[in-house]
Length: 333
Image 1: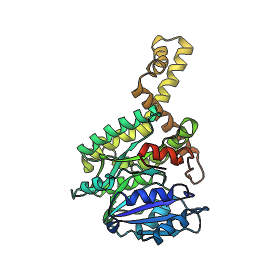
Image 2: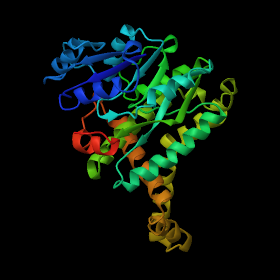
Image 3: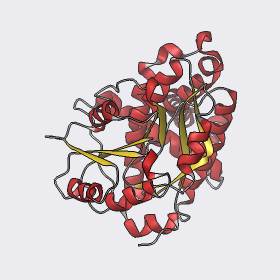
Image 4: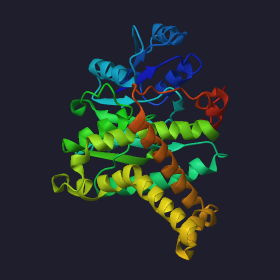
């Protein structure tokens, strides 16, 4: 088992993250690869843990070149049959790795991702995650799921392909490539991880960045749409995800725009109903989650179209609250 962690200024979390990984799986069967471009003491802390006899290898980048480049380097150095990519601002329950390894007993499985456990007070995010978990579990039973989650992505090393250096959805991109090679890519509901969800403007910014990356990955693989060569994945699952992330925001925006024009010009009752419906449905948790997804996807699409520079991930301070992360994971400070 190789666990890879790209890091950037994670001195507050790296020790706890490494301790968490080694509490989940036998040390003699695990290696951790840290690819670091920090200006703080992240690499030094990871190195100090390696000096205590833990199988940690630290590679220091000369300059910050992005997560995709760091992952490509880490994947090239990995020795384990299974390679797990994770983020520093997440923790795992003790059974996470064992549950994922069990999935790989099925030779048809090429990649496994998990489901998030977030803080209780963020009900909007919990509703969204609950719906997403159910949907992806269903997709996995039918064939494969499309979207993978950065805090826990496990791949067969023999199937890993080089990530596009400009990718900002490396986890999903890798999963798509593995499915196109004929292996299943699944979400296992028993594989979970703990992470904090930001709130307010920072939450919208994070989700729109993720949407930007997903839109790019979907459009790059648009040839999968309704392609019978990929079974139900190509005929049903990929098109449904493509519609939710890429097409639905445009259709909804067009519908509301036309309804607004018709309502102002002709005082049309059907148009007024279309405009009033979202307000009336806002108390329904499932609708709020759907509307939230469309809002972040729309913002991500605007960013995808008009961003001229390389899209660089911005760290979220809210997700790096060590005390809160330990609180939801049941750990100790």
